[in-house]
Image (cartoon, rainbow over all chains, first blue to last red; front, side, top):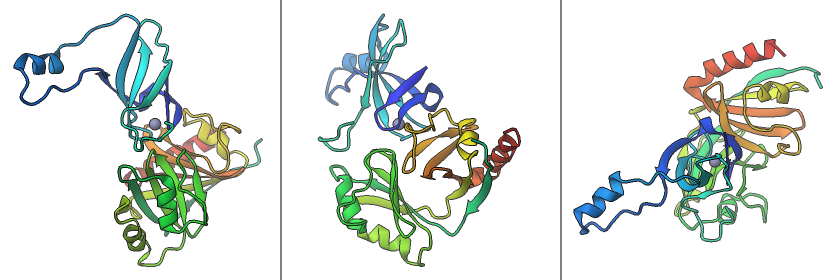
Length: 90
Length: 170
Ligand SMILES: [Zn+2]
């Protein structure tokens, strides 16, 4: 499997570290305990398109949000999780 | 191809790792470092410049500044010039840099790197931060037949072992 890094180009999966679902958002500090529990522990296990975090540890050392099809491993897109500048093409 | 391979080591380099602060663009970095007028730090995996000062793209908003014959103050000057724009660290002692030249240089590297090193995917001016034999490398293509490969200093012997072993099988 190869991942299209927006900066480095197409790279072998061995250069990356998988973190998991990119969609959970940390709840406010004063939020309910249940919301924090869900944020930390509860994950969907979708069949099909999934947005997930991958870290390009052996390349540009950036976090990516990779869209991957969990059935086919097709990767239609990948972007930097935190672009440096609002205008960055990547 | 196949008209030889020469492996040497580039020593005495000045190297400074540069990471742009939030919102600082590649143009501002190039300008502050006094690259040729209008020459920005590369925003893609490429390098620009010359022996006195080159900027090697290693990631979004990150570069290695390189000088072939640095004065004692060179790294400090680069760091001072970038004050407020980027975090910069003298890493001159952190890397060993091997130079591969000759018609077989690309063929040798291609045995280790899972990155397309053939033209036009890779050409003079191109850079790849990747891994060869489990060792992190920065590959920089200089001209049609020569490349610099930088590795963390402590891995230099291991990488040199891979270079010579792989070269023997060409
Ligand atoms: Zn990358």
